Image (cartoon, rainbow, N blue to C red; front, side):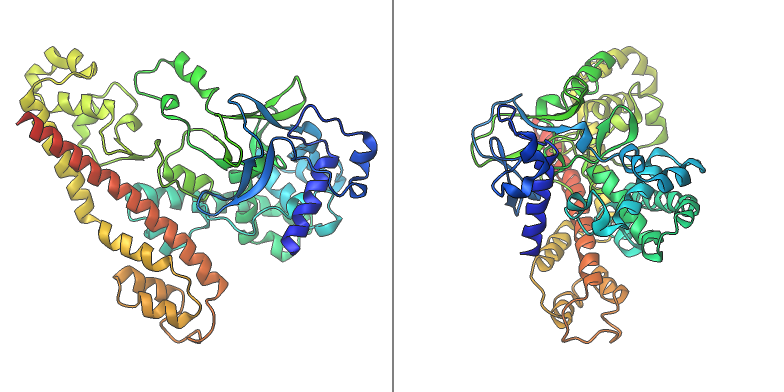
Length: 478
């Protein structure tokens, strides 16, 4: 009931600011200034409604009527956007303190957000701030156990880098927070992670501030990966990529309307969840910046270790050498490995064929497929858990645990990793009574551990599918 009341207050607040999903309905100034007089007044009434999608992002926006692709479905005025500029405009102390120090645009917005949150109900933005999550699962929030649970070196490195970068930004901004006399709670690293995660996962691009802006109601849209025809391919020209990038998002700030405008990315039927594309991201990038992954992400990629002499033959960016979500090697990876598998004295004569994506010979193709298959198998073999073990762990963790004892009974002895989880969270040493409910901290750790397992399982499945792809090609050519 408390959450419902907060949401209702927020919607009234948003309506008063002129946020609307309908351009044909005029709301007079009396209604905007006194929304409490009109309890049925809502900024969402013609095109969108707030709904809950338990298996597709949680709270989101659904269509209340059939929507056509490209149709304008939500407009958020510039005056309703929360930016560093708007937060400092009416807070002289904040503005003066920040002006004394050299902070990045993201650090500035982070400090400004924490400063605003510290005001509580005194903040003009309070109705909106109550809609922010209390925690996030971005990589920078992972502890050492959760980071190691990712298993793959590249993913572990990405998580450690994200954590270290966040710590450095926090430490260099503490002098500003001290001058603003933040209470210890708002100066803590935990609070900094929350604020920086809010910025990473909720802000939208604006041309005048690289940190972006918070967009009330607009940030209720859940994510949809770009459609297949929008995914970049290796042979696109720079002009093609620039043109396509404009079509990868469905929300944009438009100077003409002085508002953030959102458009339907496809046709929607009444009751469908209306989604927003933030751009193309792998699952690891989604986890790093937004704190979630997609079960079926057409833009996901798996990278495998490659010999150094192979890189010298590549005329494309090295990050184009990957395995697709469906297990098929990328165009560039196939082209380069075909050339690499060719005897050195013949490489020059077949280079143009390899770079065009052509099979050089049946024998060459079989060599390439066998090599890729062995590489994928070796990576899978060297990881500490198998696909089957990961699936078992996920199935166990999907259960609703009511006590510490239930968790111990399910996880103890399951895998070495599950025992390590119990130990790290103090569930093995008798630090916590077995009969009590799971501590909130343990639940949070389990949520992030589950995300790590889910991510690595999706990665392993890409390698597994690549092996199957290679085997099919070998059988067809043999």
